[in-house]
Image (cartoon, rainbow, N blue to C red; front, side, top):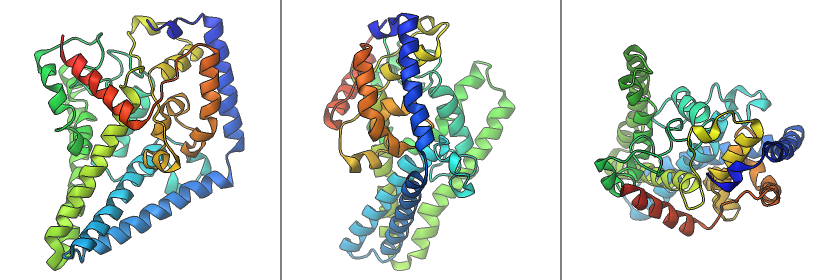
Length: 351
């Protein structure tokens, strides 16, 4: 057990109360500036996507292909990370804008928003890095904690966990969100699974048709380079999302927990676990935006429903609180976090 997880209940509760005060301050301050931020990002995304698709429609010339692919890639990263992920967390529901609301937003991803909100918001954020509770701890297929049972297939996880998974991350997550293992374990009915499968198939078909049939056909003579541009944009977005998410949960310093360790967990202890089970990525404003501010993974796990643009503002205060209570605050530059994540993947592959 991590020493910080063994904080006496009064200390854990005091830590939680100080975090609650930070949260209350941000909730009270939300307003026009925050709304302007998210609406500006939506506009930037739409301009980049329209520009990228228009340029790829005339992409027989290599410079046009490069420019169009770059714009579309950036648009997809923004939509997936800073818009889709955070809007679906309900971070902007307070605006009461039906166009920017967790109940109406459908993102540029094969998995339906409702399925993702269940596995991510309800399961992962509640049981972060708890073995047997958090399916995101290895995404069922990988062993990322010594407390998880080892199987011979895990010897291959350095192969399928990165080079194979990353470029196809959106499709892997769509299948993962179906929870197929829950059917085998009797926790999910076959009828419910088939219903979810049909919903995912409809969404995936729309995504596939849009990027790999409709827009290439509209490009006429530029159909092939347009198709390749869309493939490149999606693969790059997937690799980036895979990198950011893995570096936020699995580098050295990010802890995992057993069910026994969290028995009777109070709100303060839940806060402690969220801080211990997450890791940040150091960087500037552009990096933070392109990661959906998940470079502030610790702050996101402490306050998943606060506007993402506020994480950089509160991060120094959160860090000081962690230092005050002796809770490790794991952060570092992207190359270091990435290297330590892969060291863990290799280490956990061996029994």
